[in-house]
Image 1 (cartoon, rainbow, N blue to C red):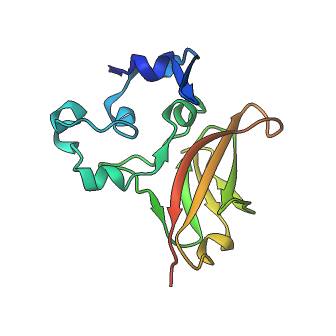
Image 2 (image 1 turned 135 degrees about the horizontal axis):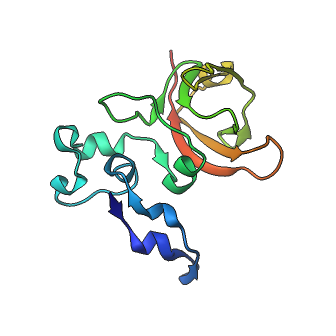
Length: 164
């Protein structure tokens, strides 16, 4: 388990520190930590044989680990790190039944369908708009637990690439 007491203590806005205790950053598993932190000495990733090169690290999704894992979102299990680029009309995440998602593609609300596998908790998100992008476009993933109504928080960002 790793800790980042700086990120766990708060944030800065307009050069002013804003205290905001975020317990997620105390006791973070190494794989989660590697989504947001790059050590100069790669052995400090503490990932053993799964150690990431810088090029693999930079290709991961941009993840607000506090929000992503705080909403119980997960990437599909596997030995490779999650890819930060998407191509095609669908992608998958793991999330509990009481977690709801919204998406913005290029700053616009994305219409989508989701198919949930109740046994594995894998959700397949499908949208023809993903496949129709003409240039690299940012996809923002917002999450909320408990109810689909209310405020959603930014959990992750992907880069959607044309699939032609």
